[in-house]
Length: 160
Image (cartoon, rainbow, N blue to C red; front, side, top):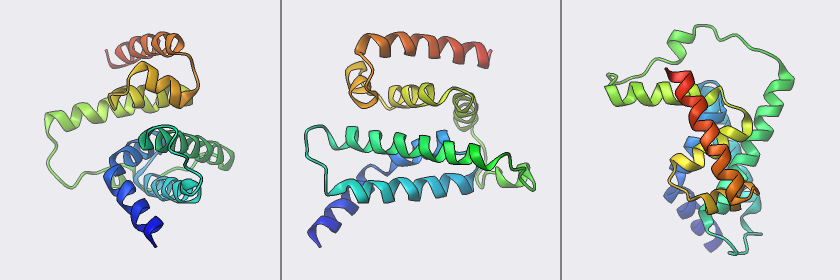
């Protein structure tokens, strides 16, 4: 029972991390919710094997990104699905602010990046250091810096 309470507390404290990964790797709200649940499920399955050799957020990012990539690969095998009405599905409930619009533009451009690029830029936007990103992704710190530079250039070109 203590394990369950501890897990719930960790997920609640870091649910923004899970939500952001789901938002970047999903194509619509329904897929976002499915991916979110899948990530939480995978975290729960792996929770007993967490050895505290890294930060809990590093461990969570690794599982979340791997789950998102697996989810993405599953979706690719299904084929393309056309939403009934894209305008209705993506309609926000609150009035759009300038910041919200900018965030949506950025997320739309991030979704166009490759699977690996999405993960790296997401970690960077979360404020992770190059060393932390390297630890999560398995790349060297230098490689993370090089990739981030290229990703930033690509995003700037896409937005402009």
